[in-house]
Length: 99
Image 1 (tube, helix red, strand yellow):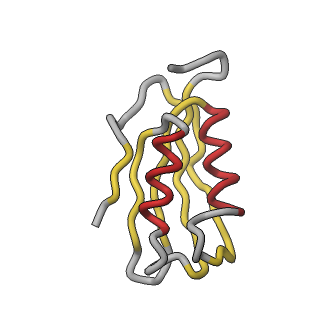
Image 2 (cartoon, helix red, strand yellow):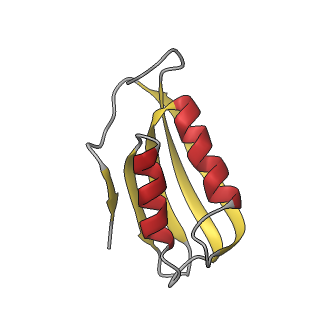
């Protein structure tokens, strides 16, 4: 699964109209389509945050999706990515929606 680029992990937080518009469900679906693992959840301050892990090129695809696409009814004003790093092994077994 690693490919030539290796595995990477990144934390993210997305701001805008991202709660109450199925953003978490669409994020989970897109991450699974890309073969990524991790999690996504709503925050108490109206954002969505999570972590994605997998082949670096696929993680970058999800980052672009989080920046520009999201769920059909969402309006993304900002997507921040932190703790981007190479990892030796995946720390999750699937991509979960956390409460």
